[in-house]
Length: 185
Image 1 (cartoon, rainbow, N blue to C red):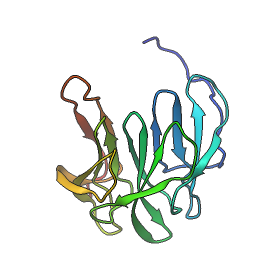
Image 2: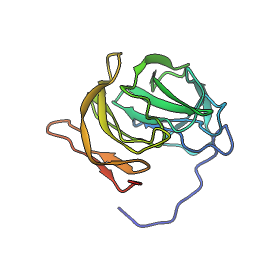
Image 3: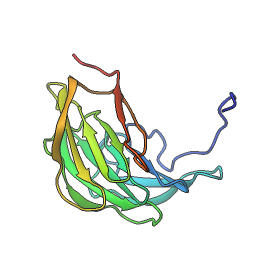
Image 4: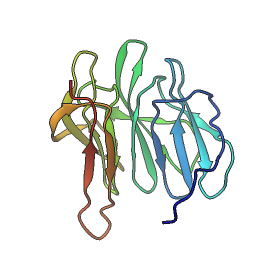
């Protein structure tokens, strides 16, 4: 890698977007426009060219603070915070095909605020979060190419929210997911 400064790529359709999730397939990057309580739109850009976001479609319910995970073809937008309500919904899209999201299933427990997500060629994983009164310790998963509700995977070492997450692919070997930092109190 060569060190350099950032260069402006473009703008999202919804100004002021934050707390959204993003997925990609190597050609397109797709991001939810999450800010406030009323947004449910999704934008996409072609990664190889600069430019503004283009409308991709809509999520099934509006909200902010959703978590995203993807495999090579399908993207998941998991959970939302809408008004003062935790939404357990999981939506999915086919990344290469603009259109509205489709209901996938639900989170195991509604703990949607500022959780962490990772995905690989098989699974979408949702970890931690904040349910309005306490940080959460649960890690749950779904198989991305099916639909259905999340199932328990295990626990974080400590309950946390607003942490960083990253993962390596599992192609040809065992992948690894990391959850780092975050609020624990």
